[in-house]
Every structure is written in C-alpha cells, then in structure tokens.
Length: 276
Image (cartoon, rainbow, N blue to C red; front, side, top):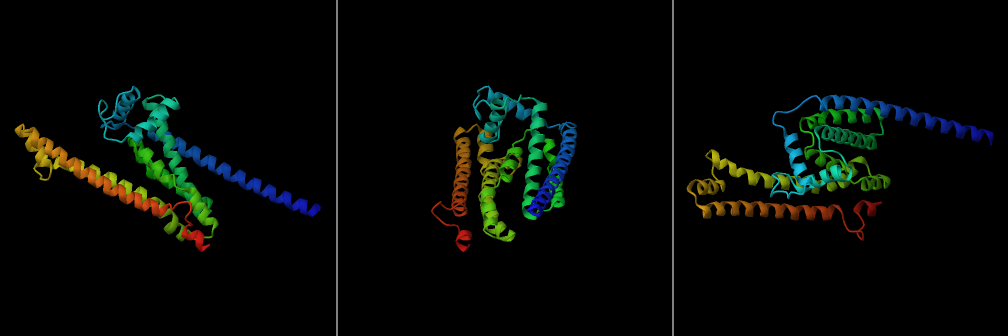
C-alpha cells in the first residue's frame, strides 16, 4: 500500500513539474511576443492612413449614422458589428492607441491558435513554439493597418470546429483522414465564400477599366456620364448590379450545398462514425 502511494505521489509530482515547465515556457514565449508586437505596432504609421479612415467610419457608425448612406465604406456590416461589440459593450475607446492594442491582442490570439493546432497535430512542444512564432512573424503585416477587417477574417478562419476534429481523433482517424475528411470539408464553405466576395468585388471594380480606355459594362457608365445620358448611365449601373447579384447568388448556392454536405443533419450518421 505504501509503495503504491509512493508511486502515485511520484507520478503526481512529475505531472506537476511537467505542467509547471510548460506553463513557464508558454508564459515566457507569450511575453516575448507581446513585447515585440507592442514595439512593432506602435512604431510605424502608413501614409495612406487606412487606420484613420476606418476610425472615422466607426465613429460615424457608433453615432447612429446609417452605413452606405451617410457612412462611406466598402466593407460589410459584420466588421461594424464587431466594432460595436468592442466599443459599446466592452467600452474600448475609439482611439489610435486602443485600436492598436486590439490589433496586438488579435494578432497574438491568432498566433496562439496556430500554435494550438500544431500541438494537437504533433504533441511536440518545440514544434508548437516554432509554429506560434512562425505564425506571429507571418502576421506582422497586420501592424500596417491596425483595426482593419482582416483581423476579423483571421479570427474566423482560425476558429475551426474543434469538436468535430476532437471527435474524429477520438474515433481513431489518422491525421490525414482528419485533414481530408473533417478539416477540409469544414473549411471549404468558408473558402468558397471568400471566392464569392472576391468575385463580386472584381465585377464591381472592373468597370473602372472603362475610365482608362478599357471595354465592358463600364463603357456604359463612362459614356452615359460624358454625354449626360441618364438612361444609359442607369442601364450600366443596372447591368453591373445584375451580374454581381447573379454571381453572388450562384456562389451562395454553392456554399449552401457544400455546407450541407460538410455538416449533415443530426439524424444523419457521419461516414467516419459509421465506419468506426
């Protein structure tokens, strides 16, 4: 009995030492990354000043001005809802300093999420630390545009469905099977949604080519404006809008179909569960 108790205590002590060492290493790494990120995010300012432009639009939105009517912006409402949560619910001031601190927090959170993914895949502390550092260094461009909607996009991409991945691993699937059968199907709808948004933006922006001698639907806008022909100008706007809406609906249908296949109903038994 005494021998068993001694062995149990030794195992408990080893586990405590292991957790303490990992916690200390993690704390040192996060402190170092936070110090470096703080020095970098507060050490530069871009001439094009997207940061200031976004802060102005956020201030106008928080004052109750309607988006796309009295607030000029090319970004969707999700970004401004995110900003409302930060500044209204959490009480973060709409200032350059606060915006850069939020950027640093998001930046560090994304790097930690990447490190967590590496840990789940490898269970190696060194690789986890290297993955976290690599992700942190790769995302240094976030400091060029603090408060940009790309921060929200990064959090969305890295916020994967952890329950599905853990369930698949518990069922005995290999890492290759998890990647091909779980992670990729779950990420595919988001990838298609990104392609959908990019396509709509390209359709809307390609009309600018007419201003530099290009053709396309933008020709109607340029000629209608030059000739004072409102009917031609309206026809150009209407056709561009129709093409963009059709492209958006087609991609949305594709996203819906892919999402249904990736997330079957509760009554449906996933193929990997049935195989197990």
